[in-house]
Length: 283
Ligand code: C2E
Ligand code: MG
Ligand code: MG
Ligand code: MG
Image 1 (cartoon, rainbow, N blue to C red):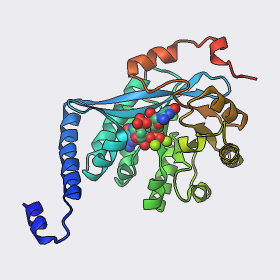
Image 2: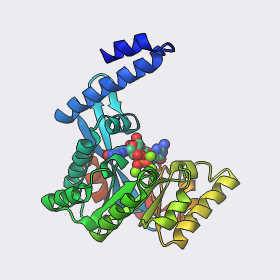
Image 3: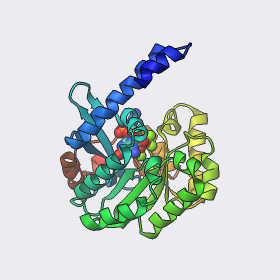
């Protein structure tokens, strides 16, 4: 009704904007239903220790299995979840599912992405502590990935959440480093354990001198600040070689493993990788 009213009132009515909004509302309804009916899933992408090339962790990544569209990527539905108030529930679902799955993978670090919207909840930290205790997941094995958006919205709050997470033994990493506007300034202000270099910083490092130098300099900054570095989106072994030489600690990307089901991750993590296959690029 309100929409009909707006339609008559606004002189420069743009039907495409209205259609997009309607589509998002429809998706939000379907997402709410999917959450209820168990059509959200969590997949895991192994992360490798750059020195040994053994898997040392996994990143939990949410998926939506839509009956008509198929697999909807999180870049599409996470923003919809954030604006429709579903992100807290989805975040809780992912955290609990991932911790339960990762209980079977001793010694493997679990990274979970958290939306800035979830941090608005003042109880975020205590809810998380309750979930970890209930599942029996050791906080020392958990890593929370956050993006710069968290820090922009409310820096004081972000800093206090980072501090309380770290006090519990949970590691905190700055995700998508290199995509934002003032990332370097944030390194001075906030205390992270780790940086995740965005794929955009990795692309071209084997062919473009400037790309390579920018990437190496970024890793050097992180190391100077005693931060661990994970490179994301490593698609070739040659990229991996450059990154290892530059001092990158962890590697994640299609070159080594794609996101996979919990079951597949379980067998992947338990299988020992033959040395000859694991280290073809080692010096
Ligand atoms: P992210 O946290 O930066 O996750 C890395 C993304 O890069 C994942 O996409 C992963 O599948 C993809 N990726 C990994 N290796 C490669 C590679 O070698 N090449 C390329 N081209 N891509 C690679 P995905 O799963 O589609 O997730 C996209 C984004 O959605 C994530 O980016 C994260 O920001 C968000 N996201 C995923 N799961 C969750 C979640 O549970 N909660 C929240 N709040 N956000 C999530
Ligand atoms: Mg991430
Ligand atoms: Mg990232
Ligand atoms: Mg991303």
